[in-house]
Image (cartoon, rainbow, N blue to C red):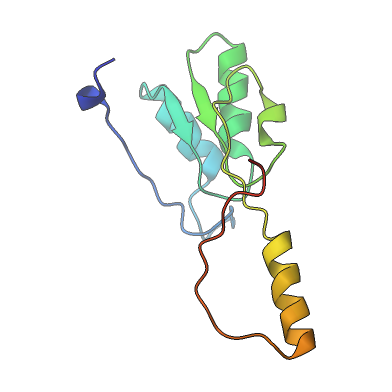
Length: 118
């Protein structure tokens, strides 16, 4: 595929997860994407609707893939259609900060943290 032909549609549901009556329903959003011909669903919310729905639809024969969000085991939901997952491991940075606060050496800073996975 020619990268110039790629098209993106962004739908903001309104929060990091579904709040019935407040946000859009992520299951409905993903279903609509697939129904309108989207090939890859990328999620930026902290729940699994994107990979769940895409996995269900792929099992029914739809050619669809997913990139879930911020859960190391997210691809386990539907490994055959998962293209990868961005995962944020805040533990090491939080520990370093907590220890510096405890020692009285913490100073405000902006840090670009490298991946702890590789």
